[in-house]
Length: 480
Image (cartoon, rainbow, N blue to C red; front, side):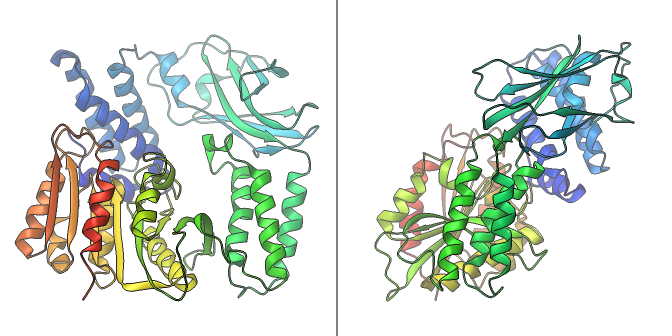
């Protein structure tokens, strides 16, 4: 009952649209199962549910897979799985958009990811309120709807409208309470004039030549605000400062209109974007430029791949509060983290192209030593490190996969690339056997491998302590 490379690829190949939710739920459920101290007789109830979820995933039955995983998680958490519990967990609420203004009418749609196995036997009333996201202040009552056919939402979503009251700008949640069943909420932002500014900024950008260098980074910020309005970032909406994003885009547009590079003399942690050749979208990435950067010299570049559920910010912000950037500054490296297209992409297809496009964009704008380009990642990023390097072995001087695995059949393609591999032997998410198999195959193929297996190490805690040793390993390996 361990997380495997096969399971990862199975989910990501089955349905790209909802792979992130299914895969993150699968990782959580499998990890909980592996660390559970429940008696065997109770675990015997969980294992068939996980098996059924994997089978549903393979068949492309997304809702059924999520239901089985949620059922397993409820048991692992000591909860009773009832019809009401199943209905509440499967409930969805979708607003027409997420960035609102006072006085506007907002459409709400209620549905279910799956159909409950047991009938609810009730038609509850629905009450909708606007609640401050910070938990301070009184809720604003919006609407009451009587006798909603809750049992039929899986087949026929229920739709209604509410009016946004005259409240202060800020972060809120639309809260829907179904009497006697449960509740659901979604984040929204209320802001006077934000969307009007967005349209004005888009008009300014449209007047610039499409070949303008760094225009994609300004457009990426504009696209970020548009995506937040459509709900693409889900629960990550509240901490976003969309006003600051537009302000930064406007400053960049002002510089570009004057023919200036908005990143000139900017060092440290930067947010950038490029226009994807895959679909024309603006894809974000994070870049670290060491403070001693000088365009008269060339610099090593580390491409760093995030794990499942992450994005371009994860490796910079989520591991030791920017630990990798401190090490990069000490060793004078450029470091870039792509978004990887989707949170569960496995860096295949268009997500692999994202990695290559980000690498090309950094090379365009900065002086990168072509003999010192390195690729590393954690969890899904480790799987991606091995797979992307196998497809493009000519690009990288060394690799750094941590807590991952892959297809041992790619080893001959990587025999000339030195590898720094780390895994905890108590990893409950990706079993240590995954790295052991890859290391054995790489050594058999003739690759130089430095393998560190951390005694008692789990899936995440092994990462930060190895950053310094990984950079030291990279420093010793220059592509011939």
